[in-house]
Length: 255
Ligand code: NAD
Image (tube, rainbow, N blue to C red; front, side, top):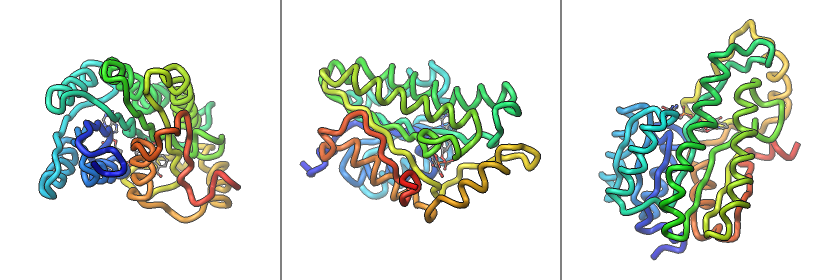
């Protein structure tokens, strides 16, 4: 048994075709966990799973839109059937908004960002909880954002979605601590991944926020630096950490 307690554990990582999710899936596998790689992107998900298997690990790819309840139920069933349960869930998949201020946020932008960044983690967590409760243990890690801590890191939709994620984490931590389930989040600062900052030049958000971000952020982080924090929070090394939001941001949150 490794000191992290992750050896042999069943782990679902969402958004694991790319970026922070991919780096986390590889690190969980390196720690000996069995990993279900869930993503919308089939090629990327299969590539992550293949990479894990080629290095002697155990992984499966599950493809679909994780804001769809049926897809979520299939993904969780797949992990339970293959690995006998779900001990760790990493709610990481997410998308950026267009950095729009609230008055310029169209219905479609709002709904898409909230559905993927907030509703999908809600659905996934609700689907894994019965398995964690039956086992009497579980660890859930969310990828929030600096935008979940402040109003000056993204547009209205993304900021609201990530504040919502942090609310879920804190509520879960309180509601389920007696049942042996922990919930925590990382709040990444700007990190080198494939996330698109699809900000329209005409939008009023980037002009306001660009200056604030430019003045305060540190260096660009790597996906591996975020993954290290996710794996720590999921592991037994963080057994007394519950309801925490860990800024992984070269000190941006401290400014
Ligand atoms: P990324 O684009 O490299 O990876 C995100 C993955 O999520 C992609 O593989 C994508 O296919 C998947 N995904 C998107 N929508 C999905 C859906 N509906 N169903 C299933 N999979 C879906 O980006 P990343 O930076 O690694 O993002 C991971 C998380 O980190 C996100 O929640 C993001 O908000 C958060 N984050 C990133 C940064 C950053 O600077 N990169 C900063 C703060 C927070």
